[in-house]
Length: 262
Image (cartoon, rainbow, N blue to C red):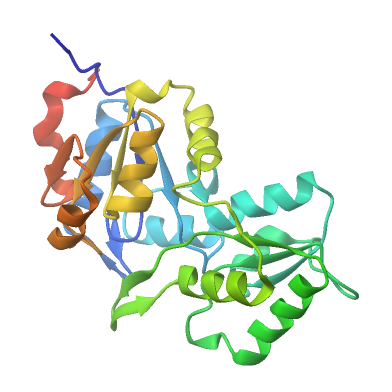
């Protein structure tokens, strides 16, 4: 008979799980307090590419969730490590705040070694896309911080970076290196920082593909929440069966019997 091992740590998505754009999700603050009360370690992992880790930490703290940047693993930060390790320079389709994690890496002249694509929202222009294309045409490597199709903002559903990564892949006849979720190394880096094996960690997310499928592939337990971008038709179409399905992260404490509580 299969017995599920106790959950000893968590990886938690941000947008759609802890907050929706600028609005905290009810009960998220109390849930993080519950985790701290029972000494359950966690890391926030996010495909958000518009903000630096410092800004994300400040945003969480303003919502009553005291956080420092070392508790956050973002796709933008992971890509900056990738470029630094290869001693290259990059052309970035990123907002200015997200570029804070790339100090010293921006290509000032000539062809970049890497083109890094994140979400620039409505500031992305044809001119910037064409400049990125020219770098790729001259041999730069395309780096996708994530390939999400869309996200949920205060204005409604919005195109995400994945749409523009696909555009550049097609135009430059290349394949992007994926850095954020569901890329295996991204999860592995966060697990290493937790110091826990995958079977002892659960991923909590609202995206059935990047959060749930990505984590399950590595052997993590999975919890899908019905907030953020969750749509029942996406879950039905995916064929994925998360270990747990909750209305909101506020319901996490109802799974207390599955945790290694202290």
